[in-house]
Structure formats: C-alpha cells, structure tokens
Image (tube, rainbow, N blue to C red):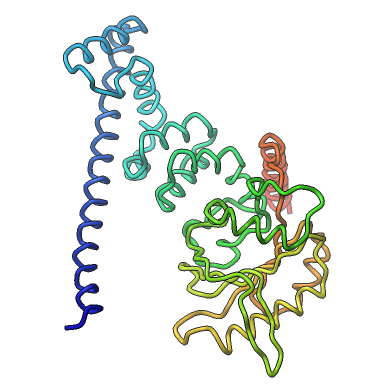
Length: 336
C-alpha cells in the first residue's frame, strides 16, 4: 500500500470524525432551541394566567443566575425573546423542524427583521440550507434578498428548492462589498470579485464552486478566455460568467453561446448537464433582453449587478406594487 492510498484511508476516518462532530453540534443546537421554546411557552402562560410582568421575569433571571453562576443566555432580555419566539411560531407547527435547524441568533434575526410568515419561512429554509452564520444571514436580510428574488422571478421565491435554472439564477445581484471606485474597468471588476470571492459566493449561493478566472478554451488555432468559470452543484453543470461594465448589448449573446458550445464539447463531463452562461452587466433593458433571448436556445441568463445597496424600503414598495398587480389580474380574470 503506497502513501497516497494510506492518506486516503486516513481521510476516511477524518471524515467520520467531522460527520460525528457536525451531528453532535446539530443535536446540541436542537436541544437548546427546544429548551428556549419551552421556557418561552412557560413564561407566556404565566403572564396570561398569573400576571407575570417585567419585574417577575427579571427576578426569574436573577434566580437562575444565582443557582447556576456563569450560565449564559438567561438574562431577562433573552427570556423575553424566548417568549416572543414561542408566541411568534406557536400556531405554525409546520416550521418546528426549521426552527431547530437554525441557531438562536439566526432565529432572532429572522423574527426581528422580517414581517410576513412567508418571508420568515424563506429565510429559515435559506439559512438552514446554506448554513449561514449570523452575520451572513443579517446581510442577506438587510440587502432585501427575499424581495429581490421575488422581483426577479415575478413570483414567490422557490429557488431554494428548485433545480430549474431560472429559479437558481437571478436577474439582479448586489455587489456592494466590492467597494469599486468610479470609474472602473472590467479588469477592476474581476479583480475585486476575486478578492472578495467569499462574499461573492454568499450573494450568488454556496452551490457555486469557483474553478478559475480567464479560463482558457481553444477552438481551432484560436485562444479564448472565459472571465469566470464556476461549477454549480445543484444544477450539476459548468457556469460561465462574462463580466461587463456597461449596458447589455445583443451581440454579447453570440460570444456567450460560443463559450458554452466550446465548454460543452471540450470541457463538460458526460454525466454533467449542458453548461449555463450568465452575462453580468451594469444595466439591462428588459425589452432588449427579451428580444435577445426570444429565439435563443442557449442556457444563458442576463443579470444586472449593483455596487450600491438598494434601500430595502424601495424593494418592499416595489414588492407591494407587484402583489397589487397580481391581485388586479386575478380580479379581472374572475370578471371575465
């Protein structure tokens, strides 16, 4: 047995350790969430039946800390949060598994920063699937990820469950973390993305695996280079990204179709799905995009990027307008 084979066997054991560690962490977190739920339910009922108030909850916190010095998580403020946690979801038993899959910090972010139960459920699923840390989840909520996804698809988001390309890829991405000075060149944009790849993947989704920049493909005696090449685990295909610092132009489609054909013929593995392309532009006129894609058979998406966060209130207002339009369409169809 050579050294490489031995290392492979050792890695198998290491994988068992990592798996058991992850399972133990999940069980601990699930137990904590169940405990906080039970305490929240108890306090909520005591308030209703026996008239507990802030002073009683404060006394409860002090009593716990006196009996268990050094224990964390049982301040009066956190006990009130447990009560809020229970009262928020007590009539939503279908979310119980998702609540246990998320950390306490993530659950608190979702409660405090979201409004509808649809939005709460979306972020619970997203945070569970992507294994978000608290800061990562907060960034997604603050950047209006839910609203942007609905506005992008024109319907309630199902991207976290769908393998359809149009569900996984969106038509707008927020790249405010790049800190690009105006004006900038395509080279600056690409280098800023590479420097902030972790944040870039947070915005695009962790199913994206980065392969290379300026990925070389040769056709005949000519050399061509794809700006950024990724592999998408859920779609099980290569994703080529072409970066543009100007508005989308129809001629960009021909270049991307050429890249995808080259990748499918010379790079794609037999078990993988056809390659997908994304042309990432500063702006994209919806009519120009529609005309460009109307007769195209390629798997290409046109997406905008913004280097400044859009105010979440603006996104929420646009979302309300979308819902109003949908309701109006339903009313008109019923009258017909």
